[in-house]
Length: 332
Ligand SMILES: Nc1ncnc2c1ncn2[C@@H]1O[C@H](COP(=O)(O)OP(=O)(O)OP(=O)(O)O)[C@@H](O)[C@H]1O
Image: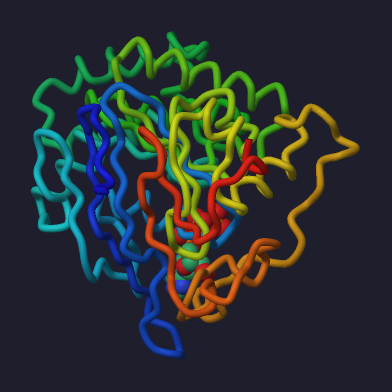
């Protein structure tokens, strides 16, 4: 069976492999990943630290940092084409133009030496915006919609803003050029609980009001379980499972997804039974080169798992999994 969704895709990642150069040679941080971001939906990309989430998300802007490179695959963005083929000015126009990206720890991604307003003007000039006053007006409006004082924020330096305010500023800058696709990398990490829920409310609201296609990257299953329409689970550079959020949480079909859910008290509703996943996730150098990448931490591992890498295949409508074990009642 193919891995395509029936819904229209705003972004379509196909056979993506991203390599980083290490002292052991070039190794994959993302391996043959194929996934769609359905138009108008919020997709959550989850997995432990090092699973390749940020690398996959950065690839969508063809912005994998050196010493990394996209070695295979394509990323089709609606109205743009294959971003892996873009370079120079065409690529800069897409970043912040069609695709708005709020960086991980965006708390620190702002320039400490320039006011937010000055950074907004730099962004406008980089994108050849003719009417900068209109751009400032739009940014203030957006900021106001997010519960910020637009005038004050534009006159501020980043150190004058709280973590939650900086995160909102990151979203303003990502959307002010009317991006249709919004990518947020760990939007709530390093925020206190109150600011976390305020930022998530804002993401939900701007997503709906602006008709966005949104990708939320997080290691925290709890964050996306309430926010996302769909979940995509990554482990060791592979997509191991995806599907609609409610179905995937109620009936996880990959042992890794099940373990992530069990480890999240916010989903199980019980801090006492929430168990951290035993063992450590692999990095580029330790990820198994043959067979299933999860087998060393998997309670269901069989001989075949050491020999053959399971393919990510559709096993029910709108559900895919990469696992040799049969989906059993245990998943339900
Ligand atoms: N610049 C780099 N050079 C070499 N290896 C890298 C580089 N950046 C990331 N990696 C490795 O690539 C793998 C995937 O990293 P990535 O940051 O995409 O994962 P992640 O799931 O987003 O985790 P985190 O939330 O910790 O960023 C990890 O093993 C990481 O160590």
